[in-house]
Image (cartoon, rainbow, N blue to C red; front, side, top):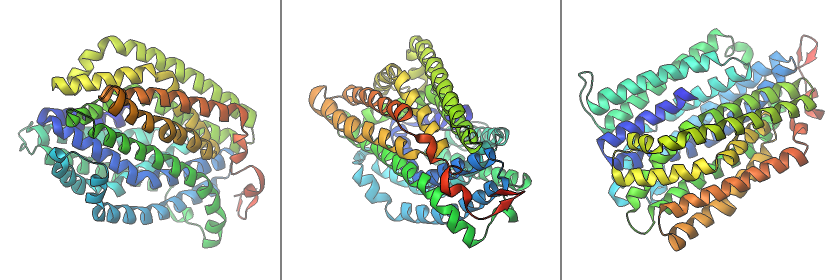
Amino acid sequence: MFFQFTVGFTDVVVAGRIHPHLQGALGIITQCQFLLLVLGVALINGGLAAVSQAAGAGLHRRADRYVGLLFKGGIVFSLLTVTGGYVFAGHLLRFLHVPEEIFDLTLGLWKLLLPVLPAGYLSFLAAAVFRAHKNVRVPLMSVIMVCIVNAAGDAGLGLGMFGMPRLGAVGIVLATILSMFCGALFSLFAMVRAGLAGRRSFASIRWEKRALPYVLKVALPAGGSQFLWQLGYMVLFMITGTLPGDSVTAVDGLTAGMRVEGLLFMPALAFGLTASILIGHCLGAGNPEEARRVGLRIAGAGALVMSLAALCLYPFLPYVTAFVAPDPAVRAVAADYIVFNLLGTPFSVTSVIMSGIFSGAGATLYSMAAFSAGTWLVRLPLAWYMGHVVWQNAAGVFSAMLVSQVVQSAVCLYCFFRREWSGFASTAGRFGRFAGTDKGKTS
């Protein structure tokens, strides 16, 4: 997670040294990428739950077949997303009310970055499959490679270091494309070598018809949650980009602040991924009580550790924002964003870890309910009201984010303690008995 964060962080830091507006353009492009990847990420989440539960139950053949199913879905998904991204690029940016000062820059960079989407999906899929088998070393090596290649490319092609030509924004794009394709090829090679992507991974159509409903049962709510969440961030960019005053600076500051926030919540995401894997294995082994205990321990430890980290970061906030955003006006907006998110640390971390717990159990419906309520019923209406009517600046938008974090964490905790989320596991109930064998066990 640290190296994954560093990839995006390096892009923003280098972009800020080329031109402040480039930071805002990259922030919008990042949200567009996430929106197009949302279905693929949802499919991966559904597969991750199924693979980890099958592995926990000792059904290794079933786990391998789920991997093949995800590969097939990924091929179709990649073709659709790249095509749709090219066709609707201008319409999407117009919908987001991207400021005219950075519209052409954003559109050009977006089209250049579209070929990265299939490579990004493959890397996400490979990392999820290895994590589901409790192997975190291969994803670590892959993202280290991506980080090194991207950082060298950003510094060399973006800023003209190491004797390379200074290409500016195009250099950052080229570095991203090269690094992502390197990571995807490494991940594919590692999966083939580990036996996770071979002939045994591709089952019959009959088996896939029986297995697909559970993947979709997990993936569709996860996709809905991710889609609404990322679309909510895009609308948040739109609200920020139409604020009274210097809206471009507000967008630039929002982008820079989100990168610093990513550093703080990187361990929270790692806690969430860990929870997803361990919960899946516990439920696959038929031990829901242990799954509940593991979930509580991870959530408690994550919230405590990250709250202490937020306190430690606060005194160094001026230095951090100065490093990320050299422009003073952008730096001030980024500082406001980070302060509000530091205050919301216990709530946002709890939400992230609870989402990982529900994902590992296959109960993504609860994550969708929590994040949708927090984003669309609280965050966006309140952001418009506080940003455009009450405070009339970016700080009003950021204050609404704090309130929404409190709401979504409360919904997550309610679902954890009051709903039977463990019953969503694939090895629980009727689904666990579909056809196939693996050393005498249903697979």
